[in-house]
Image 1 (cartoon, helix red, strand yellow):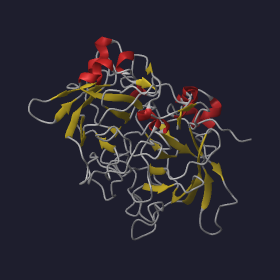
Image 2: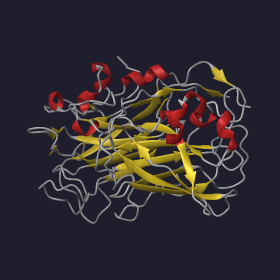
Image 3: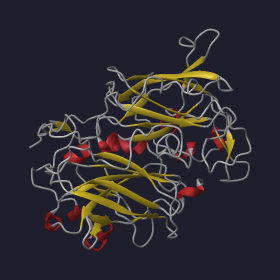
Image 4: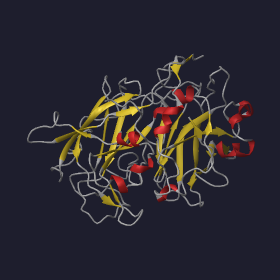
Length: 196
Length: 233
């Protein structure tokens, strides 16, 4: 009797680094790195960085983060996005582990606006999936940018209570193309996670 | 045209806070997840051809000069969605302990030997029918500090992408009839018994190779697409 229900999620555990984020520490080539950049990519190059904390405010050293995003024109490198034109080898996906102090960092480009299901523009955003020991299923969240006027009209941010929107908004550093966003898995300033 | 993935499927997943799994206590969100409609961002996902995977990456027994210790096994199956469709070109990554239950990881200090001929990582891409296959070594059980006499059932970790960012799955494949199942809070974090059973591979005598390796079948089922189409702009 075939059971077509989905396979449940399980934690990546603490020992995923050899398989998923070797980052030069192990003799196994990386399928992915923390950079989406390709030599021919167009758009504004940015760095998105921060730290991950648990409910006690303790840094989480065994997290893995994955990002997925549109290109600078708001198009996804996926044949399902029929608007996409092959303009670059940009793929829009990157993966990064946290270090012993819970730090993560991605090198990427500022994404363009992507339409919502009604065709209205969403504010530029990056999708973020958070995996880690102690997390039985990964968590979905979004990274918005502090210098985007479109945030005020974004339909997804509008679902989030105003006082929690800051947990999704990466703050632009002064004079540098660097955005900073800490993730809190639990507690008073808990990051907003979405049920998708 | 893209499709919406039903959120009902998510009921098969573990509860984020599963207090018997102690590491979940300070890492599970306290606040409810915020439901949202899928947009193009959620409905698309990274696409992989074979370019990230080298030939032989799916054979964990041939990555070093000698044969690894332990019981050689074949693990194979299909990546499918809930509607039974094979998911082609899906990157499947695996990682696991060696036959003694030891990971190649700086933080794994379990006093069991490291095997110089086994590092425990592999990857492959599912074919046009969603079929994937690995050759590896049956991992050992290992102790962990969660509770008194806590031992993980033997398992292989799998990471699979599917067609969109919302079908992303990381899971663990277990082996049939493991005596540790009733005592493992990670396995038992999945509330539904039928869903739990989907994480257990089946012994496959038909594809077991004489004088060489036992075979286990593990089909991976990702979320399926709802019938309601959504037009892209």
